[in-house]
Image (spheres, each protein chain N blue to C red):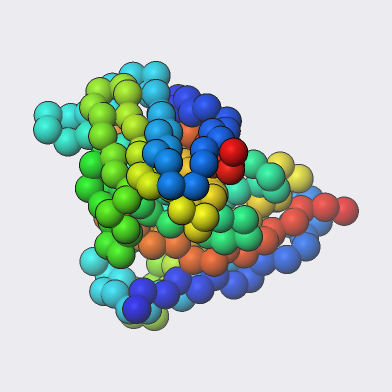
Amino acid sequence: EVQLVESGGGLVQPGRSMKLSCAASGFTFNNYDMAWVCQAPKKGLEWVATISYDGSSTYYRDSVKGRFTISRDNAKSTLYLQMDSLRSEDTATYYCASLRRGFDYWGQGVMVTVSS
Amino acid sequence: DIVLTQSPALAVSLGQRATISCRASQSVSISRYNLMHWYQQKPGQQPKLLIYRASNLASGIPARFSGSGSGTDFTLTINPVQADDIATYYCQQSRESPPTFGAGTKLELK
């Protein structure tokens, strides 16, 4: 059974940093591109970042470029999102997702609240 | 960015057909591949892939869900609608970066 389990969310002040993790199991992690997708409260889905299966390529939405860093550790089957210089508009539930035929599998999500 | 337009809501009766549409601001098809995908999201849950590349049923998804379309116009059909299908449905394109989602169509009971 495919499982993606996010962790690391919570309340953080504007301008501070937070690192999310996503532990994968039930599939060959290092064969899949992976992504982060967010959803602000009561809003729709928004792609955040993608990383290639081997970590050699990364892609970001414009609003997070230079502030967020996606990375992965294939030996640990874990995906990360380092979020720096956080803003109130980054408040959302963050999902990790595998990428093959669309976003195939999704984690349960982790809430990040940016507020003073 | 490619903008995907969905109607905000659709009211249906149980046992009837539901047709949810998604229109793209430009073609999301390359050759024979229609790079549009559909997701279901229930309140408090993560999204779930229903249909990939416009018309392919994802693993474990019931056959009452189907997808069609090409170019800029795509449709998700649920027939017959069951109570468990009440949710919000999103389309998503992977033709161009950034991948974009529609705003979602909330399926409601009539």
